[in-house]
Structures are given as structure tokens and as C-alpha cells.
Length: 414
Image (cartoon, rainbow, N blue to C red; front, side, top):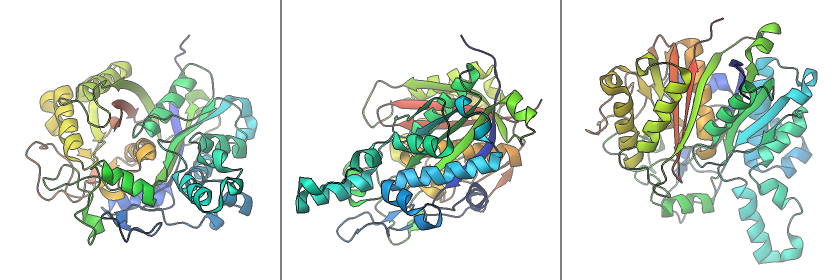
């Protein structure tokens, strides 16, 4: 049975290549700054990809020694972002432990731990494998550790849908509250795969940029004619979602409201989007229908915008199909142009950025778009941050395996 609960966002936390908080990240996005640098997390001397979007933090500044040793980097990032979000929302989980859940999307999991433990197996033998390998590696452990640390005893799990994982986590949390199975949800995404194996694997799939190793900040260039792939990045974002009446009763500051969430599948190819973007079109149209609004009501789109040849053209085609002539009037920007592609965390980061854009009525630019692809001819906000009256905004995520997920957020009003 579906209730008619309204779901609002009351807190945001972020750990990204641009900053170790939501505020820092958003301010640098508005300033058009890039967080892409030379890789420091692993040896790239024999790799032809030497750049990435790394989160600059020391785990000892945030976590005790036991947490540092028993959590992979992707879990650490998620835990820190979740603590920030809870503080931002001023939510006392101890007041509603059984009605607070956790959903954290993660596409891959603890690749750093797995890679290290393979070295142990090869060099020292099976008896030296860490007993914490499994609970450090499995991708649901971000949600598990956040649930344990925060005392949240409601629904708790991981969404795994490649680059749509973070969006699916936020959308799933929204639906849980909407149907009345929780009052509050800690929802987000996390990923940390900047390792030799991670870089090598994505390079082998011919999806990473290789032309800008000497100028890392120029590498991620969505919708540009000379884009040559995405830039691998790590990060985490957490949003606090609440049933609206609960948020109002405790006088919480409401950042934005979630109006709709829609998923579809391409059923086409393991890595490529369908040529005309049929799955993306159905996801966007489905979200509009569920939000009970028209395409003309959307004032901003945070694009998936990966900087790969096929994705950018296909997403542009899909937007044109859904919005028709209105597509040319909607400002669109790619967060990935500045932080790179954080895989399973991307949708959550972009949902958080979209919510903050609605709150501030200001959107960030798409950087590095200096020579427009003729097939990508929409308004990608290349002239710096822009003040926009946003009533409704759309955030798109599309992932390997044909996963499509779309969120519609709106400006909150009673």
C-alpha cells in the first residue's frame, strides 16, 4: 500500500575531489574549479592513465584507529559524509532508531582492500589473509557501518547498479519513506577505485581519458568535440531524507523536496547506451509522469555528462526527445566536468548538488567545453555560475548494464 507522504531533504554531506564538505564542494563547483590531479594513491609509472579525481583527506582526522584499520576507503568516505549530513540536518537518530534506515549505493566496493589482499595471498600465502577481507570488501558494508555507527535500525542495504547506484539509493530511500516504512533515511553513494587495477580495468574498456596527463584539469570535458573519455574519481555523498511532517515538527531546515524517481533498463549492451537513448527517454518521461508535471516545468537538468563520446551524444538526443523545443531553453550542467566520474557515488553527489542548487537558486557551469560537439548543441552553462529560478530540477544517471535512474527535485513549499 502506497501512502502519500511527502519526502524532503534536510541534510547533506560530501567528500569529493573538490572538498571535504558539501559547502566547500558546492562553492568550488560554482567557481568552475577542477579537482582532477595527478594520481597519488597508486603507482602509475607504467600506466598510460596518470590522472584522477582524488579526495584529499587523512582518515586519522575523522576516524579512530579501529575504524581506519577495519574499513576500506569507500566505507570511510561514506561514514564521514553521513556524519556530516546528520549534523547538517540536526537529526537525533536516537529519537527514532527503528524508523531510520540507511541505503548507500556502491558500484564496486573495496577494490583497494581486495588488491592488497591478493598481494598477500601471492606473496605470503592463504594463512596470512586478513579475517576482515570480506567485511571490508563487500559493497554493502558502507550501509552496514553507517547503520551500526548511527544506531539506525530501519531498512538498510546497498544498491548496486553501476553508475546509477547513488541515484537508485536516494530513490529507493525516497520510496521507503513515501510508503510509510521509515520516517527518516540516510541515503547516498560512495566509491573509491583509484588503484592500479581500477585504472587499468577502465582503461582496458577504452572509457578513460588519456590525452591530458600533463594537464589534468582539462581532461574531463563533457559535450566537447575533443573529449576522449571520463576521468576516474572517488567520493561520497549522503542526503538525509525525512517525511515532511516529521521535518516540520522538529523545525528542520528543508533544503529541497523529492518529487519523483524512475528507473528503466536499456536491455541493449553491457557498456554502451542504446543508440537513440530509449531507456533514458523512458526514465525521464516516467519521472515527469510520477511527479505529475509537464516537461515545460523543469528549470534545470544536472546531466549524467560523463565526457565519453557515446554517453554525451545519447543523453543530448534523449533530452531533445523528451523536452522537444524546450530542450534548448533548459540550462544543463555536468558536475563530472569538475570532479570526474565517481561511479557508484556519482548519482548521490549530483542529487546533493541539485538540491543545493535549488536552495541557492544558482547552478554551476560545465567547464572545458571550448569546442562544442555539433551533436551536443544544448545550453550546457559554459559562461560560469548562473542564477536560475528553479521550481523543478532533474538529475540523470545512466550506468553500465543499461541502468537508467532519474530523480526530480523541487523547491520546497508548504
